[in-house]
Image 1 (cartoon, rainbow, N blue to C red):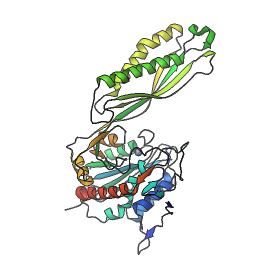
Image 2 (spheres, protein in one colour):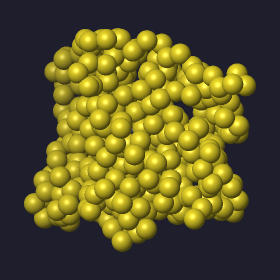
Image 3 (cartoon, protein in one colour):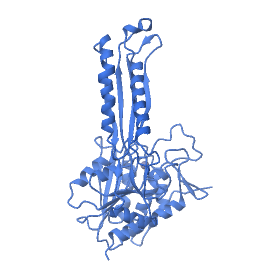
Image 4 (tube, rainbow, N blue to C red):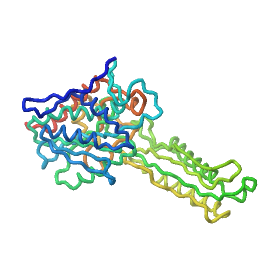
Length: 403
Ligand SMILES: [Zn+2]
């Protein structure tokens, strides 16, 4: 094992330009603890300074609190439709995970680069940044845009502000690559997600008088059973899409809380649930079914005991599915750049559905495997980084370079 030392910036003759190879750039990015709850502004300041040293202007699109930002930069003729290379800068927490190495210090071991975010997805971000000096020297007929976001891991929140800004420009990009870990496979479709919190308000009383109360936990349980029934029905009856590893829409309850003591009929219970839906399966119809059951079956029974009871639903996060046509030029470009002759579909969500919904043909392709994402001792293989470099070079060459 060796530790990748703090990378030494290389400077050219005029003493300004910094170049870093992908691994050195990745070491830099990993060292910023950009867990979603933290600010990412230090990382963005580093990226801006780096881009500036190559004569590339960039802009930041901040969140409401001014603590986080997206970055958008353009290399080449900004007035023409171009290619977006996109990645998120936030990472999931390391809390409670058993790491062998320091998660915020890139560590190379037997061809694997370990560190939080190496696979999801600072590896891709490092590659596109490391290639900036090379891309900037190309005779570009179409621009290459870099789009770096915040708060992807908490529901694709940050990138929405950036996409809204893009919509105002005259030249809609003709293609977007979201570099989430796909082992460099070309992914043309992924599921969408809606997630909600159900809040059940019951009526408290001593548990010896239980029938005079409204037990919030028991009504929450009835809702969860209903969700389970909906999920089982979809699993049995579809709709199906065999190209997804789980070929149908899934339903899941993930967190629950309620009650205060065993001898009190609980007044409150809440739980969080989600639908991970096929791109063509409208999750609102499923949600309406659940809400109809709550309003039609459960609430009348609750109100019969006390009118102050009820069930409320609060939206948490959602993002659309991705369903780019296999025949779309962006897929052909990505297949040719990655040397593959097929594209596929995955269950996990990305920002790609949002770019696609904004009218930008989008593909997901990036280094590393989703199997390593979010886990302790996360890594990306150096060989994947090398493949990604070749992919980005070929993408830019065939989509943007003047001939
Ligand atoms: Zn990711």
